[in-house]
Image 1 (spheres, helix red, strand yellow):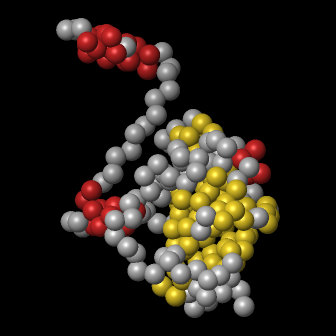
Image 2 (cartoon, one colour):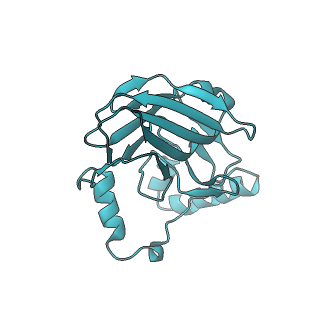
Image 3 (cartoon, one colour):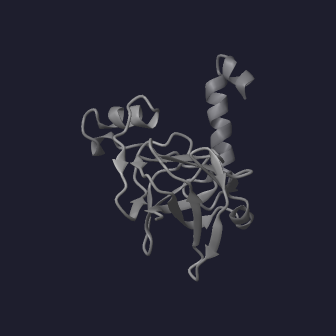
Length: 199
C-alpha cells in the first residue's frame, strides 16, 4: 500500500481499495476526536504539563479515608477517554499500554490501605494476571469478585508517603475488543481508587 501511494495516481487507487474493503464488510475502528470547545483556553496545556511531570502537583496531607474517582485528565497511552456506568459512575479503560500508571497527589505519615474498584477486564484471564507496584514496591493484592461482576483489589503500602503515591499497574498484555466503541486494545476498567491511613 505504501508503494502504491508513491505513484502519481496512488492516492486515488488506495482510497478506492479502502472503500471496496469497507463495502465488503471490513471492520473500521472509529477514531474519536476531542471537542476543544469543552475546555477553557490554556486548560489542556496546564493539564499536559502536570501529566508529563513538568509542573509539580500540590501534595495534600491525607487526613482520613479518601476516594479518587476517574477524571478526564490527560493519560497518553495509559487510559482511554472517560466513560460512565449507570451503577458505578465514571470509569476509564486502561490501554493500549498494558502497564499504565496513576498518580495520587497525597502525603501520609502512616502506612496506607489502597483499594481499587475495577468494573471489568477486557478478557477474563487478565483478572488473575494484574499486578501492582505502589511507589515502585511490588505489593500483594487481596482480590474479591462482587455479585455484579466487578472486582475489588486491596493492598497495603508502608509509610511514610511524602511526595505522592504512584500506582504502576502491570498486565502481560491487553486484549483486542472489537465490540467496544471504538474498538481497542484494553486491559481493565478502573472506576475508583480509595486510600485510607492505617494507624
